[in-house]
Image (cartoon, rainbow, N blue to C red):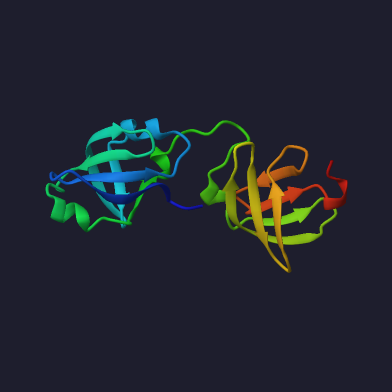
Length: 162
């Protein structure tokens, strides 16, 4: 499993004092308020302040004190260590842990590997690439078992979905 989890992408600067405008890549943007440290390009950075907007987060990072310094961080990703990640309820997984899992059905038929997770209003959808591409809904009546340690997802056979 990955040591760091991506929680946002720096999309621009904010103001002239080095603040960063961040597009959140997490379900709960309020989690940014609880962050003391983040990682950008593998380097640890201390969070000085955080403002939550409707669709963005404004972060002030220690030692980024001008618009010129902040500009260097555009399009970079903000990560947190797995230890600092939010706790997930049972049956929930980080997308980073699902991507790369191998998908087979209960009969042993191999469908391929999850290349992406598409988040929709109602449920996630696993984008599987193998001998053909499939979109599999992440629903309880479809997904039988998820084992992120073994990188394996077991689903019901396609012809049994209802």
